[in-house]
Image (cartoon, rainbow, N blue to C red):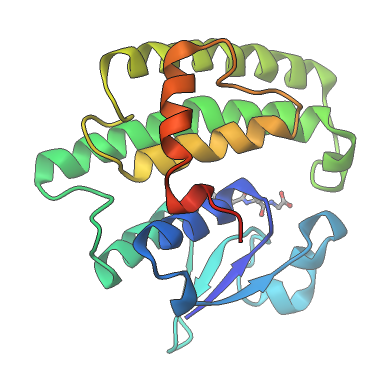
Length: 206
Ligand SMILES: N[C@@H](CCC(=O)N[C@@H](CS)C(=O)NCC(=O)O)C(=O)O
């Protein structure tokens, strides 16, 4: 299996952190693309993913999977332990519910803030809108408050154990740093949870 990735980019990190938590990062060949230099727009990569986005997972028979969560779903079946996406129909749905909330509410807000507000992101977003960046910054902070409230009631995002939803939220914490914003700072429950995450393989430097 070959994973097309980009160092420090949130969507590829969803897959590499997932593999780290499984202890299986060494089972995939990784090719890093420099997306700020436009390597993902070259014809060689467009032949892998016509949408020029990372990550993409190429299987040994040539089949290509895109969309970070779909790739994780596949990897969960290939490497079932430790379970990160749910054991029962209910738990699977609950983890997906929280994972999608984190992605659609928080990660997308930070993406808007970064892609429209960071000078380097002009390499990705041809028409940056400072207004959209400001709206997205506000949404990030409001949504961070929401997740602080969620974590006041549960130990982990999706309940009592570590799951894929925690990986997605952890990635958001790192993503915020691109805007020099520590999302957990001043939010006691997010801070407690963020400290807990430091014990995990995904938090260890390569
Ligand atoms: N929904 C996709 C999003 C993939 C995506 O947007 N990846 C970013 C890196 S985090 C990318 O490739 N950006 C390149 C660009 O915007 O040109 C997923 O979950 O994999």
